[in-house]
Length: 153
Image (cartoon, rainbow, N blue to C red; front, side, top):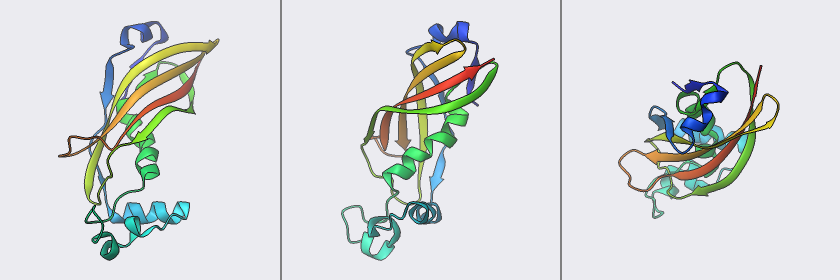
C-alpha cells in the first residue's frame, strides 16, 4: 500500500524509502501484448527460439515495458498526498536500463522520496528515486528519477 501523508509531513520523508511494491511476474503473454501495443516485435522479445540463441538465452521484456509497469508498482510503493485530487505523470529526470528482464522473471520497485516542492498553490512536484529489482539478481533492471505532480484540495 502506498504511503499516504499530508503536505506538512513531506520534509520528514525526503531522502527516505517510502515503499516497495509486491513482486510482479513478467510472462511472455505480457511481453507479446506490449509488442503489439507498441509495434516493437524485435525477436529478442517475441521469438523464443531465436532469442534462445542470444546471450540472454531467452526472450526479454522491453525496457519500456518495465518502465511502464512503474505505474502499477507505484500504486503500492510510492507516496500519496492526503486530499489528492489528481496525479499527473511529469516525466523523468533520469532513466537507465541496467539489466534485461528475462521472461518469467519477477520484478518489484523500491521508492525513495527524493524531493517535494510546491510549484503552485496546491500543486506539489514529487520526485521519487525508483529502483526496479529482479528477483535473484544483484543488478537492478532499471533506475529512475521519476517526477509526478500532485494536485491537492
